[in-house]
Amino acid sequence: MDKKEFYAEARSDLSGPLDGVRVIDITTAWAGPMAGCLLADFGADVIRVAEPGSPGLAWPPLIPDTTRPFGEETVNRNKRGISIDMRHPDGISVLLDLVATADIVVENFKPGTLAGWGVGYQDCRAVKADIVYLSVSGYGQFGPRSPQPGYDPAALAFSGWMDLNGSVDGPPTKAPTFLADDLAGMHGAMAALAALRHRDHTGEGQHVDVSLLDSIIAQSNGFLTLGAKGMSLPRYGSQVSVCAPTNSYPCTDGHVFIALILDSHWRRLTEIMGCPELAEAPGYATNNERLERRDEVDQLLADWCRPRSSAEVLATMEQAGIVASPVNDFATAARDPHVLERDMLQETTLRDGSTAPIVGPAAKFSRTPTRVRFASPDPNAHTDEVLGALGLDAQRLAELRAAGAID
Image 1 (spheres, helix red, strand yellow):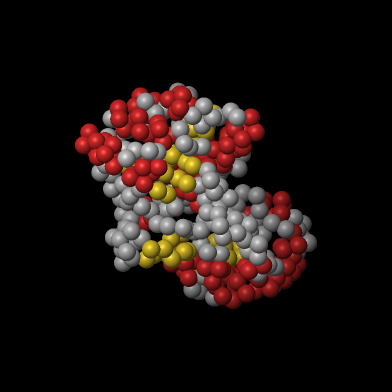
Image 2 (cartoon, one colour; image 1 turned 120 degrees about the vertical axis):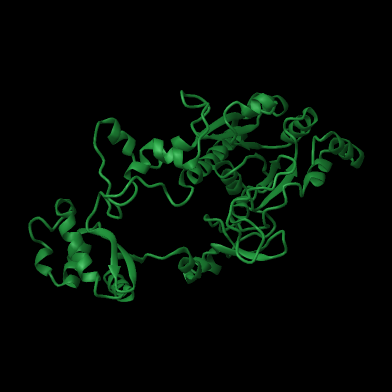
C-alpha cells in the first residue's frame, strides 16, 4: 500500500485517537514515563508532574550537537510539564485539584509512597471517583517482594529471562535496551486504556497494577510454564529453539540473520547451497528432524554464507522467498529508507533551540495519525498554564511559590 493511500482519510484537527483524554504523569526513570509517553503519542493531554528543581531525566549521553539527554527527549516528548512539591500540603492540594480534571493517573514510585504523601489511589478517587490509577513498580502492589525497589536489569535477572540471554557458553546477559521497563510501560498503557473503556461503559474507575517482573514474564513466550513443569531450558544464543537452521551468519563484510521455519524453504535452501539431496532426505526433510541436527544444518548454511558478501546472500535469499535480514547497527538502521518512510525518525525542535531526529510512535492510525508533536518540555514549562486553567490567579500562584509548594 502507498503511504498516501493509507492516510487518505486522515484528520488534521485531532492530536490523535486519545484527543480529549487527560493523564497526570507522576513518574521518574523509564517504565512509568514510557506508559505516559505512549498515551501522549496517542494524543492524550499528558501533564508530567516533577519535583521543584528537577532537571528531568538527565541520563547520558546527550544527543550530538544538542544539550539535551537522549532519554529525556525520547520518553517525555508530547507531554506538558508542571512542578509541584508533593511533600508540601499545599502542593498535594493543588495536585488533587488537577487529578479531579483527569481521566488517568500514572505513577511508578515504590508501592505505598504516594499514599504516604496523600496522593495514592484512595486519595485520588476521593476527588475523582471514576479515576483510572495506574501504578507501575518493580514487583507490584502486593506479594512478598512488593516493598522492594526494582529496576529493569533486576527484573530480567529475577524472571529467568537473563539466564537464557547471551552466547551459549557465556555468562547470563541483560538486554541492551530497557526491555522490562519498556514492556511494563506498554502493558501499563494498554491496561489503562482497557480500564478507561470499562469506566466509559460502567462509570467505574479502578486501580491498575503493572510490574516490571510480571511484564517480562508475560512476554517470555510461556517459558514460565515450562519452568513450572521442571523443564530445563537451554540457551541458544542467536539460534531459535523451534526451527533450524536459524542464526546470525558471518559474511565477508558483516553478518546476516536467516530464519527457516517452512520445509518448503529448506528445499529451496538446499538447491542454493548445492546439496539438493538433503531436501527430502531422512533426518533433514522436516523441521523437527532438522532440530535434531541443529548444529549440522546450521554449519552448512554458515559455510555457504562465509565466502560471500552480505549483499549477495540477502539478494539470493530474497529471490528464494527466505526470511533474511542484514544485522545492522542503529546508525545503519537510522539511514534505511524503509525506517525513514515509516516516520520512525521525526525532526523535532528541542527546547535548547537545536533540532534532532526523535524516535517516532510505532503504531500508525489511518484516521487519527500520531506524531512527535513537540519535544520534552522543561519540567516547569506549563505550571502557570495548567494551574491557571484550574482557576488559580497570579496572586495565588505567587503565594504557592513563596510557600515552596510549586516551582
